[in-house]
Length: 143
Image 1 (tube, helix red, strand yellow):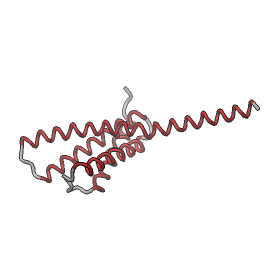
Image 2 (image 1 turned 45 degrees about the vertical axis):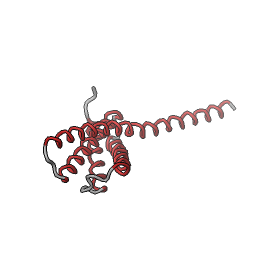
Image 3 (image 1 turned 90 degrees about the horizontal axis):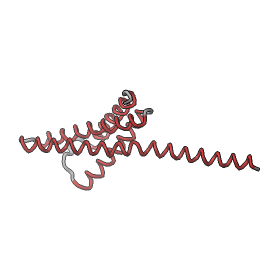
Image 4 (image 1 turned 45 degrees about the horizontal axis):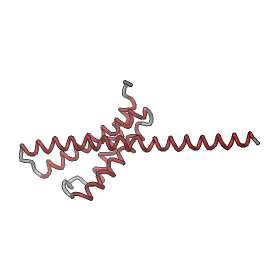
């Protein structure tokens, strides 16, 4: 009887470990996506300062926002891969999905500006840049 109880207890512990791994797999890219979003806001703030000094066309605004998205996605993927230290491509793609969802929701809520790049194009840019950042983050040297 004690052997049966130990087996059930061991199964519950293993299930808890699997749940913890799943939580870490999702929470680390989400945390990295939030940091990447902050980086994007800083970059966009810098671009906004530049725009106040020059007369920029609408196309230039779209290019600047897409560049900020690409740099932020790369940074988020890098942070995600660096924190996890394995599965960099997967961590980068998950981070890219979270970044893209944040961007789509916020753009739907607040504005329709800078739509010259389509939504699928932004998805591809986000996923590719975040995946590249994740791979580089995993393969970077430890501190």
